[in-house]
Image 1 (cartoon, rainbow, N blue to C red):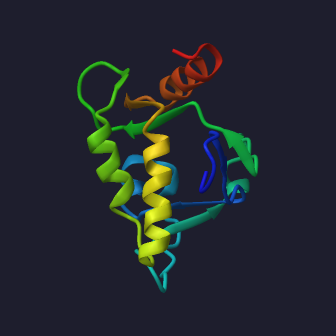
Image 2: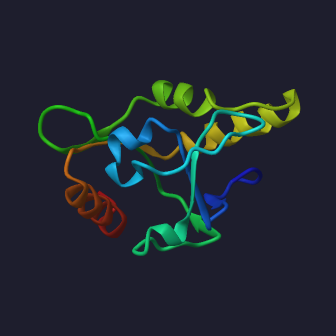
Image 3: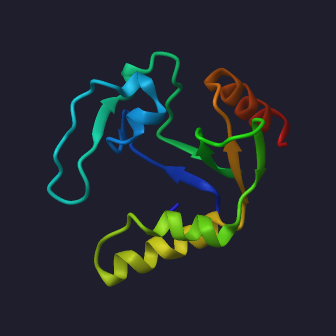
Length: 139
């Protein structure tokens, strides 16, 4: 989604990267090796084959931006998320030249024209089901 006005994103679909603290939220990641990185923060990097039920695609259309909150108290819910908070969260990990940052910031602004949501949950199965419903029904 680095150029144009459509909602197609392209990514590296054969690898996922997590911060080491993600193991606190996703027990499945505990004990995985931490990869040092020349640029950026250390991370847990895994091939998507590590997640046998994950469906991968090199590109897809994006209709929603969903922030995951597995620590939230209270009942599980999918709720609107403040776009200014989302903007800050999306920008905080970026680095690069002024030109590349300008492109990234523009991309973030296009993402923020979509519905931005927060999924609050503790039960992973519930969260997966709720996301499936969002994709299938648009709500």
